Length: 492
Image (tube, rainbow, N blue to C red; front, side, top):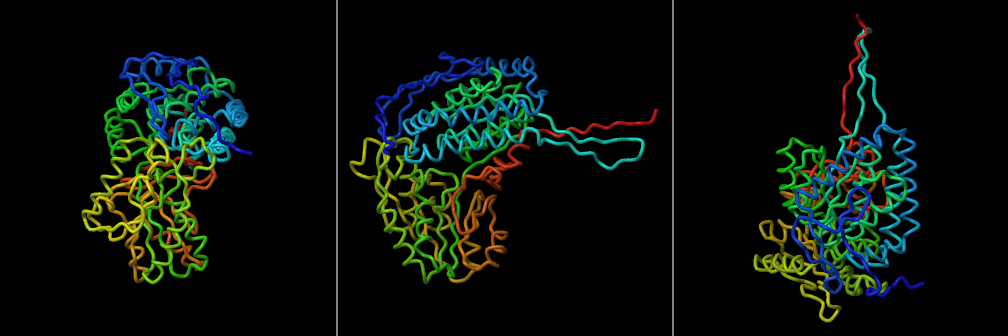
């Protein structure tokens, strides 16, 4: 059955969502919103300035008090989240089309992956509600020490334009089940699906005011982080923006979870026998979602004797990628999200070539693919350690190849001076598969795979310039809880 749809039949706006209602007005700048597949302006948003952010924050504080959400039986909170997940599944076609229509996500993926994954994340955290436990520590006989967990209150969550639904669920679901209220700011490039998600949460029985959506750009994000009612901040996005978020959070002595940029290596040992499967993994690692993935495999580290054969296999695969609009289920290469992002990637590519790299494959825009911007899958060689293409994220379907002679050199090449988000190691040697990931500095290392699996139990997050703290898994829930020590003295 075809999943393709007519984009002109989608009608969507992107208001704020405050206290359980859509709110069209705002006190910030007006921002045009273009859909990536053809760069057509589909609406404009009125950004939330400080007054609108304050209105949403006050709504969240009031809702926490009136609903006593944090003090409810954990199974009551769980029931709301599970109904929320059920409603997401029930509205899979609407959400999948809205996500594909307005972002870089292909309709062939939003139906089986994005919406289903969103529901799975919400359900997973709903099921964690009654598993938030405290600890009794060993003390003298005349005292009892309890370590308990409690919510922060109001959480500010800021998400990027890639994978809007999934990123929203990764932050909103654990924050809510922990007993918090949320101020969620989606990207101004992809503002639509967050509002619909918030509506479904209220329909599921979440008290109005606990899940608010605020539209806008960087000024709105800064206002959320700086608001005195916000006790914790969670951000996913670029390293540069993450630094600004952290400065605002530090000014208010607020904790922050940051998942930032990456420059993920793909380390291939010469013992891998199934080269066809390996080539497919590599091709997908740097072209998935048009290369616009923070964990994209952008540095291929391969033994010199096997490099040419593997690159040829990868080239043959990516040559079949069909650029096209996200609402066409035959499209297999996503558009670049905006002209600004495309220009940045092309500038980095030009600077990398000027610094001595050579283009082995691609390097141009697809001609006549659609009115959107589609960059050819590109393979570079000779990318030096001081060139822009090594130091910066392309966030486009661009792969740099590094050849090595021995295993120690391969591990050394996996290191990056700034980023340490993700990496993958490919080997048929079981002993090396266990030992070598410990020597690769990254928050997430895949072995004989590359890319996030649909598994909610695995925490994810990076080190150094790739951020700190974790989303997903038990750690993703604990990120929205603070520890309190309660000391009972039994002596009179």
